[in-house]
Length: 461
Image 1 (cartoon, rainbow, N blue to C red):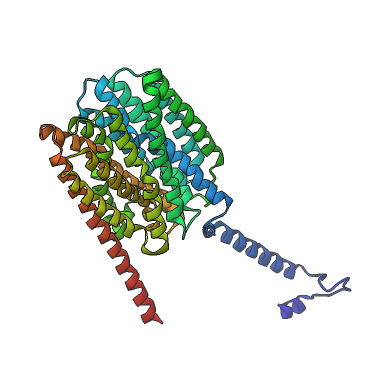
Image 2 (image 1 turned 90 degrees about the vertical axis):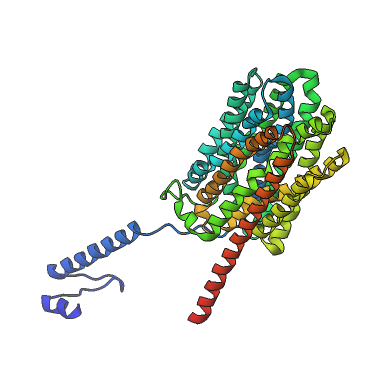
């Protein structure tokens, strides 16, 4: 470049400083201008094609992280607390509606199905940056459903309000909230999920107690309105305090079919289907079993449900702590499913009220471990936090289809057995046992992939 400048007659004048240079010919000026223009284009092109930086590692603690866990507890109190309390509503509906237990169980099954299955849409929308829109819509529909439930008089009205509205509202809030929560934690993820999951237990204790105490005094309508007021306060607090952490992922399909091509994720989803297929039947029918088979009174049947839900507090925390510290979420979830299957098989040998109390306590503990470790296990199988909402939505949808058919199928087995429960007890135990086998297979697939990767690294070095 210097020789070209001399050839064209470059003259350097006096300099005010070392960075100032006067060029007297036009040819070299054009070359510099062309160079600058080309450089600018290259910079513009590189900016246009640059990819957004990946999200920072999870803080694994801090004020906002633990606040998110507490607010997620409020969300699960409103959504799953109401679902786990369906046993008290089913017992009340059995005395006021002319419908079979199998027919009434469709109310709770549709609610669970919608809470789970809407995760496909809510999870993808959360990944795309629309968390607050989805959450706000869900809260509005949920509160509409609970207050309209207080005005219902017929089965179809209860099905629309409690089954559909509460299911849609809870589904929009549940999956999106857990997706946001999972981005704040890594090594303490199972513990944070367990704290959030205790909202289910607290809600499933508080709500039946409210119904049990207020229903004989102020009636069904005002009892439900009291529940709605409490849910309004908790829902608004969650809507104000929840914050997303990772940047949105605008591209990508609604349904990530490639997830099922990953053997660990596919086996895990099959295991989840079988584990949840029978897991909710005891919660819905233990009150009816106590009254119809052991001939207990109404208060005792509700107390059994409270015990089954109450042991869920340690059942949601202790397995999660163990999973974080040593064994992992999928391993402890498989162990909980196996223990739950054994307990359900032993239910067939119950002949006394004391035996039913023992069954309620043990099954409530181990089923709580399945429910609380399910989101943490899904997050473990999805390393990319920007895809976590979509993947969690897929897993929850699989569980939703299982819950949609499981409890009504169990009710049909009771009817086919002339009101006895042996058929459904065997079916529930076998279903949870099959879920255990597939969960174990999923973990073995993860271990095999990890072993192959480690072997490849060693051979490369």
